[in-house]
Image (cartoon, rainbow, N blue to C red; front, side, top):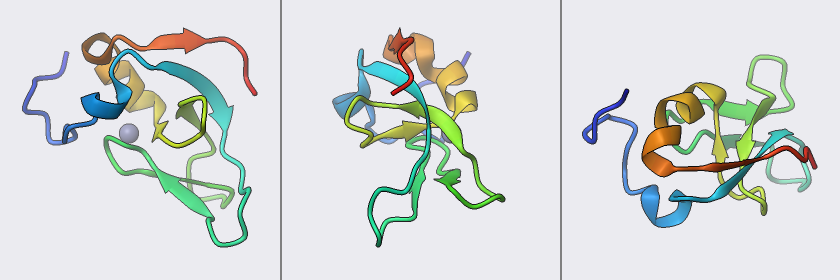
Length: 86
Ligand SMILES: [Zn+2]
């Protein structure tokens, strides 16, 4: 269980409260955009071997959240998990 003053929280509920999340593999779609960060802990997603490859994202692929943070914050944010991968 996480507290409301967890260091990873900085107003994400404005965009992410009760959102649908999709488990996806991060893919580079734009030439000049080679990574994203977890919206909570700031860990990196990319196609590089040293970064994370799979995580939870909103339908538009705008926000990415790592599995650890999803586990920690799913009750607070009441996410809806969609099975469909892509
Ligand atoms: Zn995270």
